[in-house]
Length: 310
Image (cartoon, rainbow, N blue to C red; front, side, top):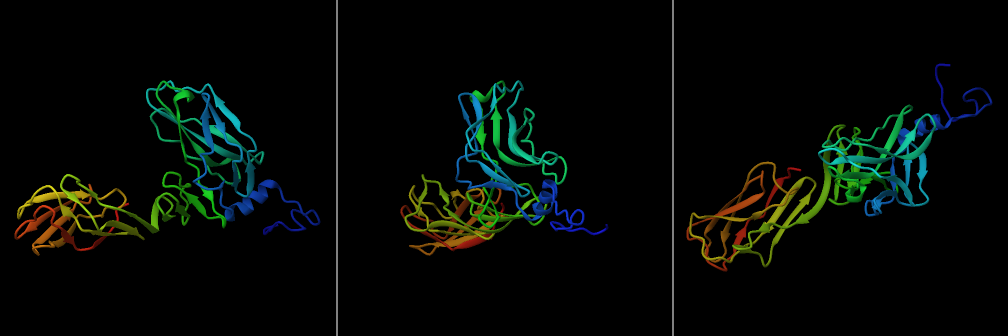
């Protein structure tokens, strides 16, 4: 038989209508995203208590169409130590064994000083894993002084991936996710995440000793670009013509790809203001030409936008 389809009443043989668990999971798994049920705002699925590692009650997930549920607080590790000279990062996962078709928790022990071990996601043989979280054990330490970090991603009501900027699922060409902590929509090229949509805002971190804002100070990030509106007021004495002053710093995640020039004027005199944003650091400097700027006087900087260096 060269061509088959299932489920069907004549598969695998006429009148049998039998589909194995593995066949079901391998067939539906491609169209069934795998992840935790819930939200990144839920408590991290694993926690430390009494020097032991625990898995929370109510943790549920789906792996290639196979359901997993933990119904009670479950102690999953005790007496774990790190004899290495650097922090060791262990990965706690839900692991689907394709031979037994059982999904159970597992701990992937890391190497001191190395990155967190990646999840394994094989289909049809071996194992398929999703993350429950990271346990970082310091050099010479144990679970008593370890720390927990979120690494698991979640499934939305329509099967979409929902995560944080530190808990994306593994790359797969065309895979899309929504990051709840950044407000970004991202898509995977197979090896890196590309931002396809976002909407967030912050403000310019002013050098408080020299500048303040009483009206406009906002940087909005939307769909890969940033838009800055700021009207700074001089507070630390006059700035003479041609003198450079550091205005502030643009936060990481809002900075331009390349150095950027900004222009404006002193409100009271009309003197020209020329500024520069240094892309690598986010530092914004300004220089006034034709009269400087006095104490308590305002600059009106022209609104400016740029493509963001994520």
